[in-house]
Length: 636
Image (cartoon, rainbow, N blue to C red; front, side, top):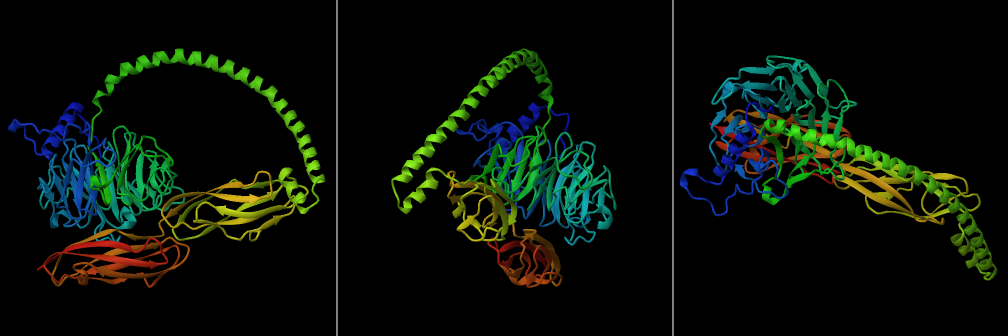
């Protein structure tokens, strides 16, 4: 979303304050103050808006919110709300899937507020609007998946600022997928020059400003490339330097590509999903504010995570908005109100003063550190040699003590005590095993190497016990089943299996008990459980369908496991009888690492809103079954 120039920060803050007062029903003309006014604790700064596919609502928070924060506004009355954008005045633009429309709410709207504009009708071209963005002139850009079949009906529509009603777009990018590359476009944003960036099922697509017709993208980052890590891109954002941020829903997390990236290029940064610290599982929407902070809506954890600018790797968020008071259930898209950076110039004198002090501190620190390091290193070297001599001297009385003990008892106990007191064997073992990402319910086995470094006695491993039941010593490998005996100066491998039963990171320690002085040995185990099956999209709107007519949508099922699964589907809900599976490539069995489609047909038998739930069941699968929300309207 572009930043709108020419507005002072104080002006934006005044607008936000006015909006907050409007939300709680305060009117300046009343002359009465609320005894506990809501706006008082509200942090200054831009608004954060989130659409939710479960509640069919939009919630708004101060962007600085954290924890179980209640929204300052909740807009209801939406149906399958998708993308969201804000202008600098705080007006809210929402792509609404059913009926296909773009609705605009005034700053401060809440509850069942009436929109100030609605773009809807046959002239608009809208069928399945998903993403929305604004340029610096207020023109409205909308991604539309068409009939969801990747058959050339997917489009990017551009409407003039202030459009409402059955308005025709001023420009449309649409045409054969072989040319436009559009298949299932979702998130959309623009850079300062007006170039259009789209997150599509085919990858990241970039079109020059003013594109229309069957325009080809001038740059692409392909989905499922060998290097770019991009799988199922959902949403897209840019920072002030033009770096490209993309959410990859099931695998990938948040991927960052340098400005101008084109082709199958590795990301410059990544916040992975299923990490131990970052909290991401199914990242959906993304926004980047003027300071570079990254806001990510996670569809699975019902949270919005905020990461500092420049984040890379499995980093913990600096803030998380989540909890029952937030109203979040299945957050989808996020948007930050555009802000200007006018006060930045004021900070220049302060920075200059700080820079002046830096050389003094640096010079002093360098001299001290150098002198200290030299003396310390010299002093340390001397006792190191002494420590070695001491250890050698200690070893001699140990041997004498052992001989005395052996002379006294004649029983078998002497033989057992000898290796305990003075081990005559030693070992090396792999320090850690990393299993990487593995679909839940699937099993992967890796080997760790055990080496008997002793020259005389055999190494005996009596047990190997992992601290997490998702790991197990498999009995594969060359060591065989435990207990294991390893001859002197030889090695073998122990097989360790990882079978995740939940999503997310799983860390454990394998404890190996043996007859060395260092027993037990500790091996670090790590792996991440990932989705084993996906059914997308999670919700589908069929629009308005006349009695006697039909409407079809395509649902994609993908099996990520290394084994085949059995498949079945069913419908439930108020109008289940009006929906049916009438085609597609899915059968009763879905092979490993493959996908298929279900064609769902709606034929209305009643007039008015209808809904049902499609349930896809697969086996084996600890995470199933999977549900798709279906909505539509029957007409006479």
